[in-house]
Length: 204
Image (cartoon, rainbow, N blue to C red; front, side, top):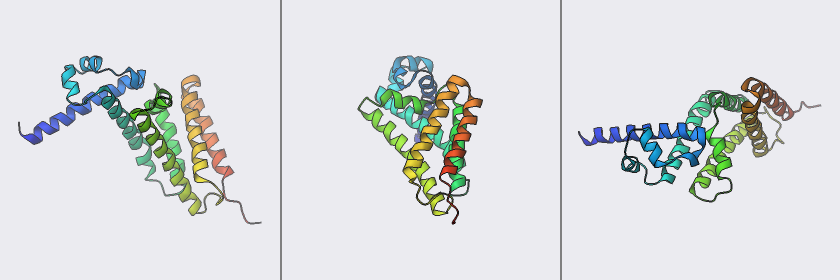
């Protein structure tokens, strides 16, 4: 086996471990991850798993990054195909609402906020960075909409981002309690109302 083949195999094995760990974490949170049970689940020794992840925390960070990459591919990448401005802002939010449908068993990224909001350390730092980037992505799209005259110039992009973020969390919350169709309908209605509130005013 040459070095390139060995490297490719190692990457594939690591990806397989992360994929299985992601499923476990979605059901029980990142704190439910443990090297021993995970090694059994993927048919490896504990030392084999440790060879790919130096510690339990390294594994948790890798799974958290994997969750963020899944969100990016499912929500942000399709939204980038929409025209810059209001269309893209709406596409981001509608994509996020659909992400809720795809993850009705629970969103690891949302769950991680509750797990680590009051626990200082590398995991909390990563969660904060991820959530900050999500708000910045929304604020950037809002800023472009303002520049194009599609939103009121007095609109604060970060404040609008905060409100849209809260709306998405409401859809997450209600989907589990009351079902996705109802939460989606309310989320879309809230999105329309919020964007309309920030629509540019016609000159008198």
